[in-house]
Image (cartoon, rainbow, N blue to C red; front, side):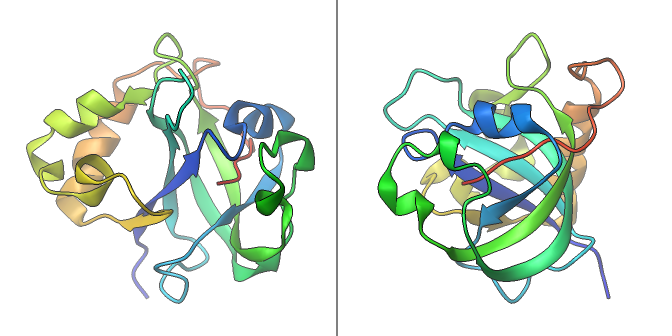
Length: 165
């Protein structure tokens, strides 16, 4: 079976992603569209959507799926910004290996992703609606190149942080 790479998006109006990532360990993240396709071992970029907040949108973490989609509660209820987020729903469990919440730490801002020719027409930059997005090989290479050129928050990758949705 081929390992795939995904973008999983968190809405800042619904979940405080920074609070989830500060806790460490594994975390469950909501999926909707590709529930049956996202598999253990797949790689994941975590995308923070701006929502109505002033947080910088873009890629803020990288990791891998460690458990397939199942009905799960929110791992970090203190990070919920709405009651609906607290309900159990389909979520994959992730191990987050590298977290970069700010431009100084090396997050990839939405505008940098938008400028990549490989990402032209991708729904994460055109409509930004949804929770899970597939990436093709060219898109993965382009994003990994940007991620690799940026400093991680600890200079070498931050193991096992968390995200929600």
